[in-house]
Amino acid sequence: MSKKVIYILHKNGAKGHYVALNHLLNENSIILKHREFSVFSSLFKSLIKLDFKRLNKQFINIAFFVNLIFSSNKKIVLGIAPFDYKLKYLLLFLKSHKIFYHTSWICWDKNFHPKNKKNNLKCFQVWKTFLEENTEHIFAVTSKTKQELLNNYNLSSDKISIVYHSNKNEFYKRYSYQRKKNSFIYVGRLLPQKGVEEILEYFKNNQNATLTIIGDGKSKELVLKYANKCKNINYKEPICNTDALINNYKSHEYFILNSKKTKTWEELFGIVLIESMALGLIPIATNHSGPSEIISNKNGFLFDENELIETLDHIMKQSFNIEMSETNIIEAKKYTLQNISKRWSTILK
View 1 (cartoon, rainbow, N blue to C red):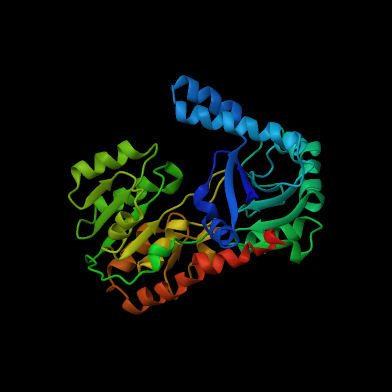
View 2: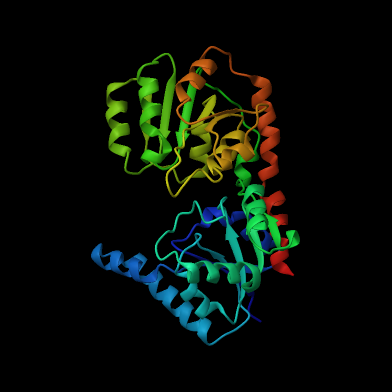
């Protein structure tokens, strides 16, 4: 007898967002499989770059969609940004299946969202019907996401579960720490909206503190430029090995996240925040919806955009707060695989 399968259907895949769900399904002998719906663009890119691994993945995705037409009652967790017009076409394939929607978006009044193409009354009606009628259940990444959905749609509270992102178990082992004084670290995408340049400029002018940046993206060359000029700024390529990443975290005192809101984005959670907190770092982050749900004045520092310099100056005048560090290690236990996996349990019913 073949094992039960639950599918994640996402634009380009986001496996890191579903580790707690995978943990739950493993405990119940259910397989989690990831599929993507950005098939045609990915096919084109894989052919242009001769990326045969990516090309093969698209054939698997195509076979999945064909199978959807001739099958029914598959459980599918759909991750798609509001108000993407492509939902209309995806529902043609998903209409005979059980759809669970997973979202981290925090504004559902149609005034601020990432997908603006073909946003018309028909598109908004498709989304309304989808949320209110087509979904078996909705999994919201934050409480603000849940509240916004309740405010704007005819949904009952028990149809929405809050499922925060989670940390891998390795982050909760007992470690010894050798933190360098006034040491700060950033891990993540290197993009203008992450406020990387402002961070670099601060540490260029404050060389009694050290900054480590780990990641890749459009701002990488800028980071390298500063790292080559300033001895207190260090750059490292993205680290995929969890143990190696942990070793980098635990030698620092503070984690810094300087997000900048754009017309279509703000920081919606920040997995790197809960990773660093589990290792006793003190988080410093822009007061966006995601960080504000994770950080309080008991365990870190939230600041308004363009107040980074004042915030860092304030922190630099203080000694590293051991009590705050220990609070973070305790607070981060809320995000263990075991705790977050329970929040996904509705999918088993």
